[in-house]
Image (cartoon, rainbow, N blue to C red; front, side, top):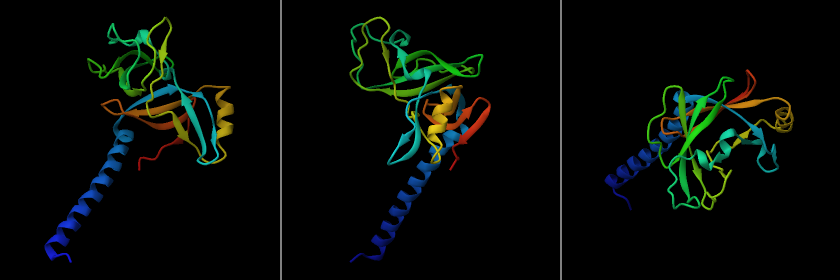
Length: 193
């Protein structure tokens, strides 16, 4: 049987765990609220999952990074390890952000005011030899869920006109999808909480 002192300590520990979990959820929403906003062109891949409902799998200009764009590949490296990557983005004249340079690990210098860094992950096994080789980082922004019945119509529209994704980027490059846009019109926006 627990004594009064142990019961109070157990209750305090449980309360701290719950507060920590809620703080973690709120911190994730802070990226949406305070992160640097970036707009990327998207390419549709697949609109539907029978178990999860409508969603679109998104491809971006930054979904394939040419190996020659990576600034810090060691001379003796032939394939990528399971590693992190940072891609520097710059806003184009059309309002969409495009990649300019990338690094395995961390960026050596902070992004300038008109630039932004997005961090991703490269799975092991990518061959870095050969002309025109690319790698495919995963940024955690490759899937966007939609209200039921909307996926197929949006996928069809994406093949006719450009759509974009507004991202919020944290200082460390972590990205979260903020909204799906059709030209200047916001179609779906993620709630902050």
